[in-house]
Length: 192
Image 1 (cartoon, helix red, strand yellow):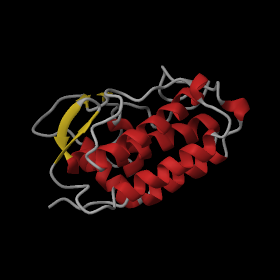
Image 2 (tube, helix red, strand yellow):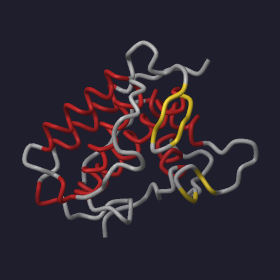
Image 3 (cartoon, helix red, strand yellow):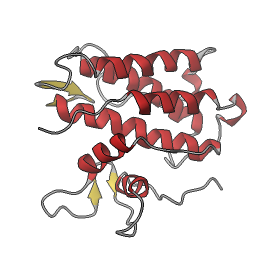
């Protein structure tokens, strides 16, 4: 049985990062070339709500990827997303959340995989937010281990990772750099 990590430290880290983002930074570029920082923050809000439904096996709600549109960030978005992140962590601590099948992003999948994806989304997008906004980033070791298990290519898979082409990093790179590279991002990315 794969360990069932606690999403709380990574969700709290994301909330802390978002609290430190100034509204004047929302138009900044991120390691996700198609997203500004504001777009990415809207995406984090949407994915938090979606993965709460996933944990609770509640298929109602929009199917597909959560929005990514800075224009959807209303006054008070920091408080709303912070509440959603806490609810997300709580939902994945509920009995049965990691068991059976569920639905995420329009796909049926084992709940255990969905929980690992939710944690990975928080970890990687936390790194994205930190990089874009110039904040330091530290990752929960349990989240790093879960993300590595999720992202490492299986059965001789090539360079196409779960989220796009893998960015190669040295074999002895820190775990965070490995996770970021496996997520299709350059661990050395800085805003230009």
